[in-house]
Image 1 (cartoon, rainbow, N blue to C red):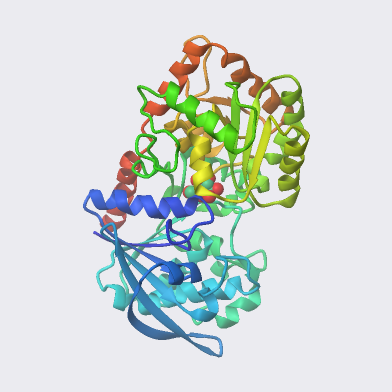
Image 2: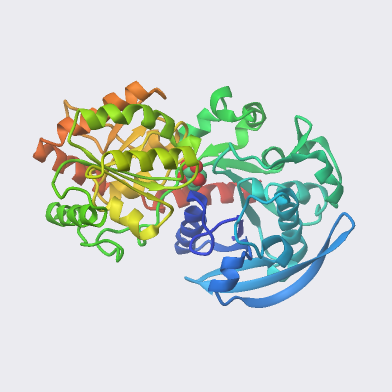
Length: 467
Ligand code: GLC
């Protein structure tokens, strides 16, 4: 079985979010089960600068009046073949996204891959696409490359981002036109992919049900309902070799799920010192996130002042994005310098230090297709406090005071009052040292590796090939 995985991000080459972690870890897990998988990405500037890729071949694609260069580069790493699509104009840039011609850039990416495919392999059985940046490929296989007998599977990591562009973008698409490309009078990459792929998946069972509703579906819920029989929800995992508190070299002291109390205390004091917080053993809340609407920062803003006033808790906020949220965290820090710290930016080392030191990890998301941070937090013994949505609902077991079972805390409605009430649960429970220790242990012992989920993907691949 030969799988070609296509995406716009993959750790460690290029990352803005969880997609990159999935595209890094899933192929490795598939490989251990004898699935032959390789990965295709754009050759971004940072990849050019930091990796020694080998030039393999070149070709051209037509985009309207332009005849455009397609370079193919290769790199083998961890026994996986990575292919990179090279074009200076489209990808040799500082950022991955956010340019006025993103529609053109990713139209190019999709056309370029199919054009250069024979130079990658003539034996691809399935192309596994991810998010809107790859959404034209299944359509092109059905309309332009009908001689290729390749099946497609399209995975939705976040339905909010659909790749919506004016219809004039079709002028540069050298393929038959049809209304499959359109949604509401625009070109819509994600809708195109949902309509043209053989199988569609998303990254948790709960999100799969949620996106069929008006609230979560971002207007594509009915398109997804139309494809309901071919739509699956498969939970993401994490790379349990990278994310392992026993071996992680970014954290101050390593520990296991058997002996963690002293090491975590040490890590906490270390982080408090780093951020100039008061050195103590009060409960410490952490947050590591892109600061965007999805992540529930607006209800956190409304809830937190009261929590600060009525507890002795400390807080560390790490992330960047919306400047309102950034400034709010800066303000909290200025107002309560011994209790609130923030790091505006993305920094892997600080993130890992938060996972290995904090007691509670905040994730009050408005929606969360899967979420990986809560999984990492649990593996490191930081109990997640989440809203019951998407993958958060599927992975965090809320503390049950009758059985003492649980791996975190949760609330249901997207509401600041409910969040605030929920934050007081761990604050009170933290004083019961034995119960807390037991919860940390339960969280750390969960299996969030890709073991089970990669098998689900293999089942779908097999199903496709038998069709
Ligand atoms: C997106 C989603 C996140 C998910 C990730 C990987 O970033 O927002 O919930 O975990 O993709 O699938």
